[in-house]
Amino acid sequence: GLLGDNANGRPRIECSAGWAMVSEAPAARFERRLHQAIREARGMTLRQADTLLGTRGAEVRSILSGGRLTTQYQPIVDMEQGTIMGYEALTRGPANTDLERPDALFASCQEEHLLDELDRLCRCEAVRNARGLDPRKKLFLNSLPESLGRPGFTAGGFLEAIQASSLHPRNLVLEITERTSIEDFEAFARALGPLRRQGFLVAIDDVGTGYSSLQTITEIHPDFIKVDLSLVKNIHRSLLKQELMHSLLQAGARIGAQVIAEGIETEEEERALRRCGVRYGQGYFFARPAPPFTGLRTAAR
Image (cartoon, rainbow, N blue to C red; front, side):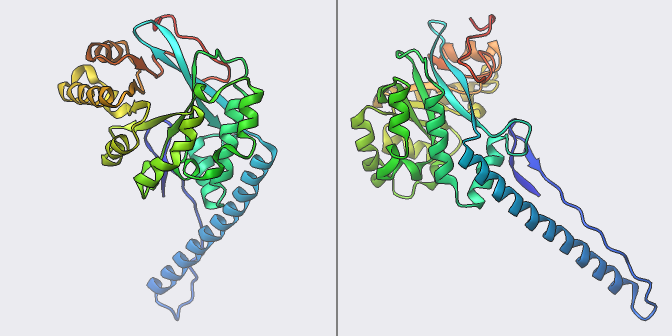
């Protein structure tokens, strides 16, 4: 069946197979024997799926208890200056395993009711691995809204990791993902108050993919608006996309938010975005995610 999207945005398909023998009992009609064989084969796939889930559950628990996550960092670029203004931290599971991809890792943790623990561990590891980050740059951390809305968000080793890395909350941008899980925007905005008073900044991710992102902007008033790659791709060929980008820039200016264009892959897209007035960008055109703090490609510079 379809199990989410892969890194390229295409549906990810996983298949299972079962088999059964069609008996030669002459007293039963062939159709009945065939249907019985299909049921047996389907039962085999269900048993295989149960076994796989049990194995996956044990594996994700081992990953979390052992802290077996890696963090990659992708630059966010000031396109006017040709410099790096910050990095987005991206978590990966153990290399060369089925759980290396973040979508598979998060899906497995959701099935095991371990999303909160994974979300906390991702934040802590991203900050711990950020030792040596230029204090003038920002570090963007993906965060689930349900975690952000709880009083204990900075507990569980997060503040200790910040202090150990010689960072300050003003260096950290909490990037809100999965906005559709926000049921009460007013309550969520109030919950962000203590974090903002400590100095943390807030970004809204994937803006442009639906109504919920626009509602989040109006209710939360983020410091950064990250525009989804679907609006950025081939923007140099689409006047409509350029007009939408102008609208987001105007909305950002009214609330004091900076706009970041995600998923920039070509020089044509980068030039079109700069003509629109977008200052900050992120994507393969500048650099791919990597374990250390990478620089910019020569062409991008």
